[in-house]
Amino acid sequence: MIIKAKNITPENFLSFGKIVIGAFGKPTLQAADYKFWSDIINYKIDGDTEIGICTVYKKATNSINGMERHLNTPEILIPIEAPFILPLLTDRDKPEQAEAFIVDIGQAIAIDEKVWHGACIPLNKSECSYFVIFKKGTPFSDVEKTNLPEITIEP
Image (cartoon, rainbow, N blue to C red; front, side):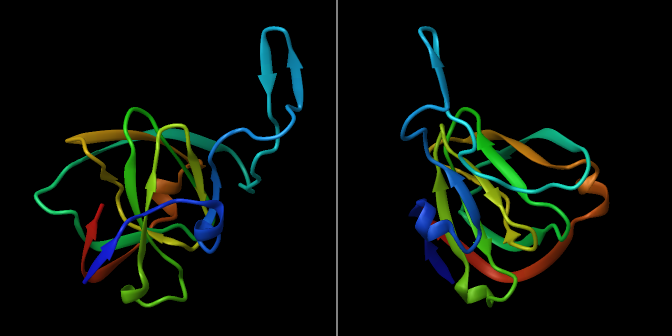
């Protein structure tokens, strides 16, 4: 199966979570030397959180054959030095309904609990890193994996 990655918007990402694309409207606080926008998105994590960094590498093809999900925490991803493609599938959809989104530098996404997601795929780079924020201990206690028929993602 082949799917085309799409540019992410709050509307087309809504069934998977929330996105920060930039600061809009009147700042919450500002002075001569700063502007601050508060409460751009909300998500709930019970307990302590952790911040990690994941680095992914370009493969010969932009293909995946599995995804993972977390039942007890959202997952926040923030590109560091390069954009990436993120494959996703809601918990009620079939593999052929998978979608992929391009997440750019300066954007942040909060993937809802129970949403299946593949490893990010570097876009136009041989590798890319991104911050990962979720409930502390998630990699050891809240990862469910599933195999899928191969999905190739076109940028």
